[in-house]
Length: 81
Image (cartoon, one colour):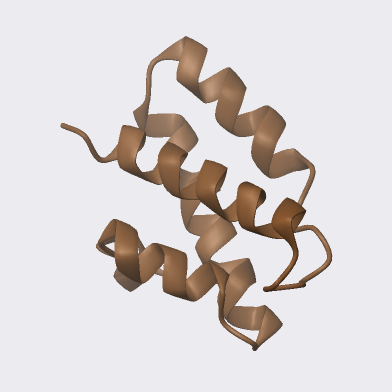
């Protein structure tokens, strides 16, 4: 899992778009692990986002792509320092 923590935003996005569910789960878990390293407000947002889990995998679906965009945005925010 430590490897997932060093992903660039592009690599993180690719992992969320991977056809294998296990790769998407690893990415979401890496985002969950960031909760303990962020400020309280961002931690609450991350907890609310990650607790819903991964939506139905539909790479061509607008709703799934918005979810991926949001996850990547959180990934970038947690790695901004």
